[in-house]
Image (cartoon, rainbow over all chains, first blue to last red; front, side, top):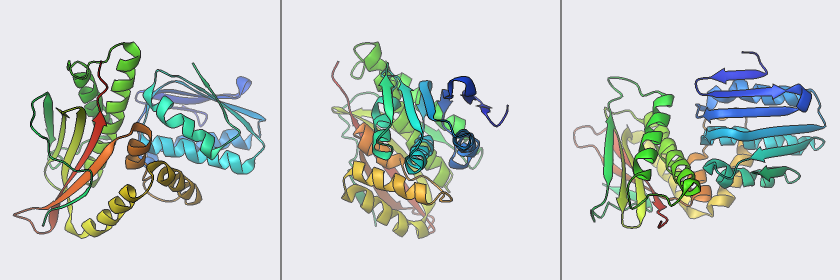
Length: 116
Length: 188
C-alpha cells in the first residue's frame, strides 16, 4: 500500500496518473478519522495540478455518510480552486450513487457526471 | 419523562415480518465492519420478504442499497454513542413502511444537546440543511463527526426520522434513546 493506493478490508482507492483517474472500489464504511488517508490521497492528486481529475465510482458499492462528507468536501475544495475539470463516472444500479452523487453539482457546479 | 422528536411512532403490530438483533457491547465492543455486516443482513433478509420483494434486478439493487445505507447509519450511531449494556436493532414492516429502529442508552447529560440537534434537523428542508452542513464541514476540517447521517437519510432516501428519550428506571444517569427511520415500500 502506498499513499496513492489505499487498501483496506473490502475496499481500495487508488490513483492512476496516466489517465488522471481516482478509482474507488468495494465498500467504504469507515469511521470519520479513518478517511484521512483517502483525503490525503485526494489532496495529493490536486497538488500535482492536473487539468482534469476523473473519479471512477462504478465499482464502489457502498459509501457511508462519513465517506459522502469526504467526497463533498473534496468537491468544495476543487470549486474554490476553480481550475481543475472534474468528471465522475457513476452507476445507476448503485443506490447511494443515484441518490447522493447528484448533490455534487451543488458543491461543484462545473462537474460532469456520467451515469451508466 | 418520555419525549419524542420528529416522526416517532410505535409499530402498529399489524403483522408482517420483523427481526430484532441485540448487541451486548459491554461484553464485546461492536466494530465498524460489524455495523456494515448487520446492515447487509437486514437488507438481504427483507429483500426476500414478499411484501418488499423487488420486482426486478434494478429494484432489488435499489432496495438493498437503501435499506443497507439506512440501517448502517443507524447502527453506526447507536454503537458510537451507546453507554449501556445493550444496543437493539429492529427492522420490520409496518403497514406500507419498512421501519428500522435502534435503541441504546446515552448519558442523561447529553439529552439537551441532542434534543436541540434533532429539533433543528426536523425544522427545516432536509436538502437545504444538508447543503449548509456540508459547506460548514468544509470550513471546519477538524470537526469531529460529519453530521450527515440523518440528513442524507431524510434528503436523499426520503426517510422519515423520529427519536424518543425514555428515562432508565434503575439508573438516573442514563436515558434510553430510540431512533426510528421509516421508508416507504414500493409495491412490486
